[in-house]
Length: 296
Image: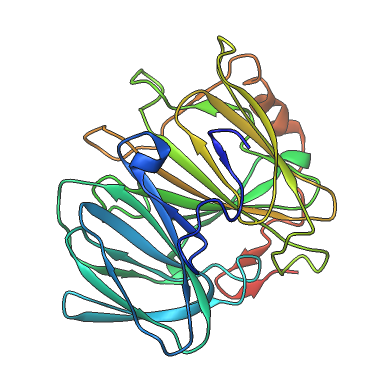
């Protein structure tokens, strides 16, 4: 384990799989909680300085906040459907309750403005097929600028990479304010499907790389189901799904810029690959899912 790679179980908080506050990562803005909800048992979350998305990973839940209630239908697995979600503001008391056991992610960001709670329908989430050939992947842009504008600092999206494919490629960075990028702290939260391509579990694995041009960071790690990887700076990518094991990851980004943005710069050594995709076809396995379920 490195300081940036947090294997499954190292961030657990009781029965909850992940509790990652900005201070735990050594930065200021981005955080993540993954909660286990037992059927019929209400959970109360106080958001404090943080805005958050309520994102079902498995199962669904009711969300009660500021006198409003949203019912999140959710999904059986991150590999079966694009889910609906909710946005909850800072300084809020949020009650979550599930009819059956559920796992709920709370990507979060320290922010200044207090906005209203809102519901995001699954059918409103744009599903993007990005890349080509063996670099084809699916991006669920549920909480990205230009799609979801109702947030102060928080950006989030989901990636599904079919087994054997590469994503987060070409490698890119967002660690300085420049003409092509903004400063963002980023969290990768991985789920790895087993041989049924649907159920996450410990059998499979993938690979992830993060590095800096000066060589101060040079991380090449095997990631497994439930792992977290922190990106404070530097180029990151690729994420590689091992043959036989589809890869999902939740990206959480937040930073100091006055306007939300996910702008980045490619590693110039590899940016030519984007032009090369123009002559390739996309992997027909993408998209893997839509709001209606699995495509194939």
